[in-house]
Length: 538
Image 1 (tube, one colour):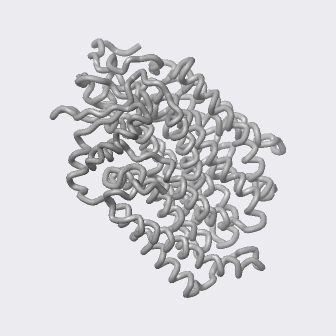
Image 2 (tube, rainbow, N blue to C red):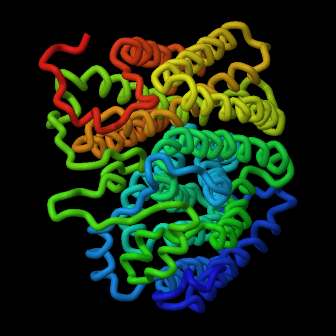
Image 3 (cartoon, rainbow, N blue to C red):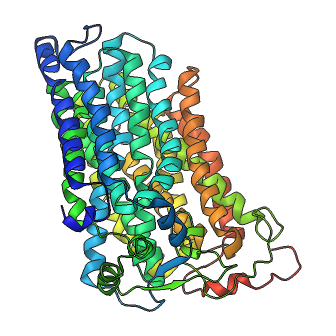
């Protein structure tokens, strides 16, 4: 870890000691896990031994000590200074090796992050069987994990402002390590609590990652860079979850999927040295020499905002393009005559994505097991689907940047529609391989997610852009909560029917985008600030 990371903080010793406490706390849970190996690692109903209880204390205390070690001094002055500084790359700046290196590191971080919620689907069949509970009761686990991500995305935004973006990624990695004990919990209630905390740890990674990219990437490259990093992170996370499930679950039971948080979380901590400190954070701390070193690496520049000016990179809550000069947005909201069609299209697309990602893809492994496949075979089939989807992320990025932003999004929605239709047909004609229909679903749904936020941020005037991207992100969570509410109330329809039902909003959003979607490729975003002609958009 770079010593400069801890400059002006409470101390590297406290962070290192906290990490060690959390790691030892997790390892103290392994003896009981290993004791259950002759019972297929079934731990339901086993009393917690003193080692586990002491381990839990060490984890909670260790996260606190690590957080203290990373806490900057003189926070009030720093937050006040940061609110007046903006760091961004010039519009036409070129990409350097530093940009590519940062993208690789952030893709790995996102794969580790996305792997957590993706693993839920592969955990559920074993969890239901071991605890002897109904699917509706077991659905409380993914439901609270999702609630945790919603809370986490708010919480980590506040933490990133205080700690800086690099330190907030390190702290979330320590939380990941601690939540790996979910795999050693002897009761469903403990699993629910731990999954909520796991979601809270994972929820902030995407916004923090996007904010780092927004600060370092030249704006003409920012849209496709976000599509590429978000797409590879999402597909890679699903591939990692299904791959590890295929390799490890048949031997070590479903519990191993949570215990993997220990090595992956520690990997993220050690990778922290490769993540640059935010130049904005350094300037706010008065560390100008280090800030200029970072800015020279990434070709970025800084300026102080005027009294009545807002930071455009912060306005865009998920960090994308910004316009220059004084904003004069004519539109007071997202649902005005000129914007209602576009806002409805983006909202419905985000809700449909939530239904697929936190509904259909989570229900798939259990559905395959119910059809007679073993968990190992089910996981292998879904890993093959994700592997097929992986190279298409590069194609998706290319068409977004070189062809058309509007039509690349429409294409991804159409691919999703085709995948849902194929799943529906598969349900009617049992026996077909799920590999290609699921691959289409992964390609389409992750394409939608990767494009949606960059596209939204390029489609609205500055005054409502932050609200627009925040609203679209919230809609994706709403879709997930809807899907998990169906699970909790035991109203989940058969997979084919669920696919058929999700085809309806996908078809609606397809029509809305064709009619109301605007082309943003090559658009100077200052054009969005001009008052729209007073007429209904055709």
